[in-house]
Amino acid sequence: MAFWATRADALLAVQDSLVFLLGGQVAPVAVLPGVLRLLAVALPFRYMLGFPVEVLAGRLDARTLLGGFALQLAWLAVALTLAALAWRRGLRRFSAVGG
Image (cartoon, rainbow, N blue to C red):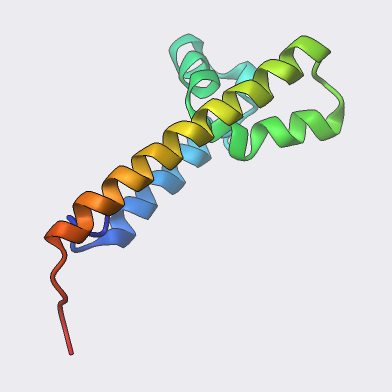
């Protein structure tokens, strides 16, 4: 996204905030209120932090564990596709700034 934004650090701050809230740092995903819990389970942020902790703690049954890994693979495919598209489009618009 730094191809289009001059302040890439602001984009990273947004991502850090989402991981903090929806990834399980503020509170375990299981205790988040309804809509936030649904977002946390559907979006990839939980799978960066909360899900590995739940796996290591042994709190997940086999079905939830397999579903979590499947969602991680799906988000990986989405991320790789979006990264490739953004990279190609960004290179067409690239202009260097500075010396």
